[in-house]
Length: 294
Image (cartoon, rainbow, N blue to C red):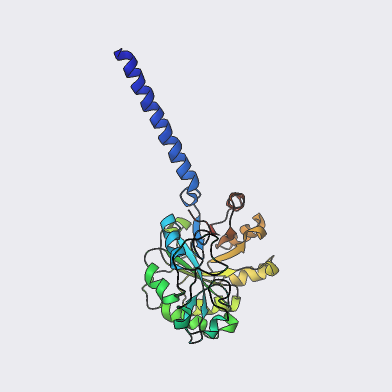
């Protein structure tokens, strides 16, 4: 009798250990950031789970373990920086009209969780539009931020306004050049340094912000009509940017090799499926932008 009980106990212990091992494997597999060695950037926050570019989306990204949140800034009628992707409020709020037709105070009276751009079926509480300053106050020193300057030609002086706010914070960064004097030695070092990155589709805007904030990493965003980048364009961009961020469907081994050969990094955007994830990972990207971090 004693022998049978002992065998039963050991079989039970073995089964429990097996279940624990399987659970650990499943958790690791579901947490891409822990297993793939890539920088995970939450696109407009965890916008697959909460209304984009809202505090709810940013805090959900934080909860899910993303290293960075990505968000967009436009300029209000009274020259304030507001976090919103489109140049109108139509899609993401319960109002209509251009962003720069409203003051910041008026914009912050809008419900940013009720527009057609909100997550389907979301039961989130009402969310307000945020100022750039509010997001900086909340997340500086807590997680990284990838800030996209939108529609720069339509907002003269927007780079100066961004720089003015950024300078209020002690962001101890000097990693515009990976592997070079004063720069980060590895991608892991970059992942462990909570800070700020600034990007734009406008090469003029990226160069301007680099001039204003030379110690902040800058990203050149690439559009389809700019692909493939010539060697001359790559040489110019990599003279001051840290990252070149590409639509994932345009990436191939050749362009990634050229960017890495110039000691710069490449991000893929916007990754939504496991198939897309696996493809860019095999290509050797350094990070991904996704609506579904974690």
